[in-house]
Image 1 (cartoon, helix red, strand yellow):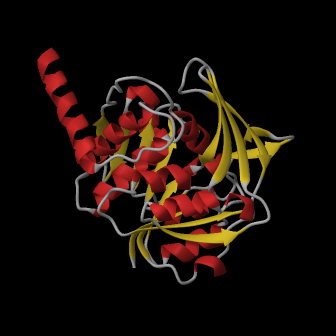
Image 2: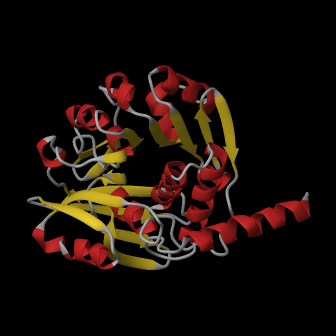
Image 3: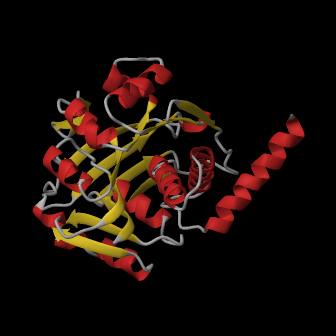
Length: 297
């Protein structure tokens, strides 16, 4: 029985920034897993990729992470091109992997299942329903809102959203994804709508502007923590959710969990690749910012 189990594809990513190009592992599951590698939590990753990229799994296992690696004909291959604004990117998908199935996860038990679909077909509705019988469901919704046409990522609506969200306890979306899901530009009204559809906690991220969490009819404003330097924002939202869920499963309040996730994400931005720091480093970042806010206020 795991505290947290993440389900999602590890990808082979080509990341293009003003500083150059880099080939590396990626995907929600990769960034989420690395962020928890030094945290005191009983964690498991269920992923799927081709044999040629199985070395990514070996690297995670060396860090002490439990990984169930399923064989796929192909590994998902993303190309992420960032403009000067590191919070905006264009994407292409050069290759896709096999979908996850109920049979593949029928023996996995967890208190929280964090689902990180990258594309609409990654995690079928049937699997969401099945996992909900064994634990809480946390969902990063981005994958259900995009499809691939001629290798280009296109925005789409999520046809099964109202049925699926009955089974989702925690949902993470950015501002644009929130509007696509609900039709509301007002994120507070959008969050309320998602809870009317069945979600218990709604996490809405605004990049460098912070985040908003809605739970039990209360809105929590979460500040953004300023990184010392902005190097790479890839996986920032995944890192935030790793910190948030880690704190929630540990008994922290929504506000504290959100602030921990935000501080963790800010540290991730300071270097290329995933966050592999410690709980102590995150707490120091939170304390440093608290001192700064006290000084200027």
